[in-house]
Image 1 (cartoon, rainbow, N blue to C red):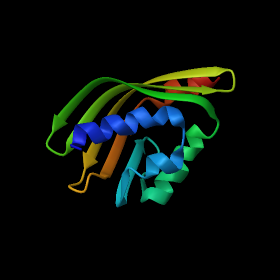
Image 2: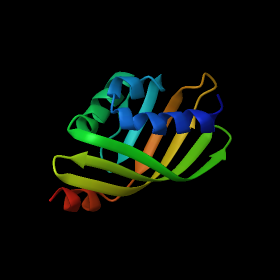
Image 3: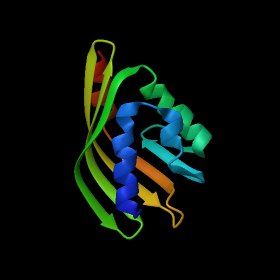
Image 4: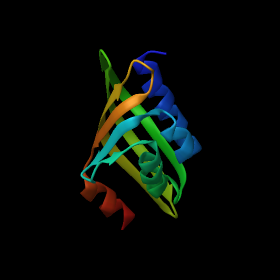
Length: 122
């Protein structure tokens, strides 16, 4: 699979809400920086971070609006949706993924407005 297919597969796996499955997309030294939250390194830490927002969600989706590829980098313009309790959260997100030659994601940076998230949580 090329970098674009790997990132699309990752985004398509989000609705299953399985942090372990999602962490399997990452290399041993991968960095996940969900800006403005502090970055984490390695699949185990990424799994924990993903569990923090997927665990309480009864539904999750990464809708990819636009995807651009520059070599091993994949840029995604997305709407990330989560249902947590009776709250439906929708966040516009810009994400950057870097994919290594072994087909594993080596870096993932997401940029979003935390105030949009907290205002929707109430």
